[in-house]
Length: 273
Image 1: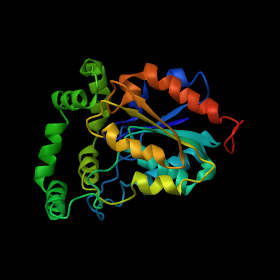
Image 2: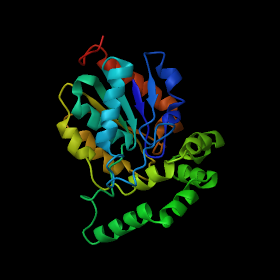
Image 3: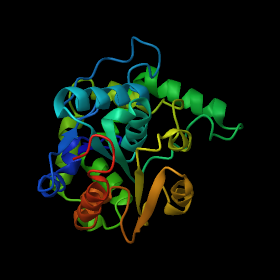
């Protein structure tokens, strides 16, 4: 199992899942390029979004599975990590036994989803944040313990589950050199793939299961239900009272569901034994 975090997250966002899942098989939680303690190549000297994009993250995941895991893996993802996981499976289905999407990002600011009237204003704002001191000041304001805690409390169904330990797990690697440039480059990313484009392209031998916290304010479950209708999706599971990051907020709900997915397809999908 390869666990993939969301925007602003890192491998430690799965700290409540790895020990439990490891009882059923090998587990890896990965830092996507630019996040956590991974390398952070400077994107500002290159064309916008040429480093931090879903195609590159998909290549990273497939290279990690080939070079480190050494056999096809289940890819389990939260938020924007879900788009990277789907792209990896589409690009190299022989490396993927199945994909789990946990509250995947629907990419509401994608250029195809922006109303025509606001497109010019979104582009101006993104360029301003990416190329001026305003962006750096904005990042410094976001990258504070109090701000991170408030953002997480908004995203989680139960604010009491947002602890100081969680804030440190997110914030400490988020303050590594180069993190601001990664952040500013990604929030200017309005292109690339959408989940509704990748799900129909999924090979028939790679199953997808979607799990969705009903209390997610960022990606509402009412918008997500339609994604359960794609042929590649075997089940759409709603999680009552849980927000955008169920793997951390409610591991007692998520861990059994992840293990169930593995058991459902262990020995069924290519490469499984």
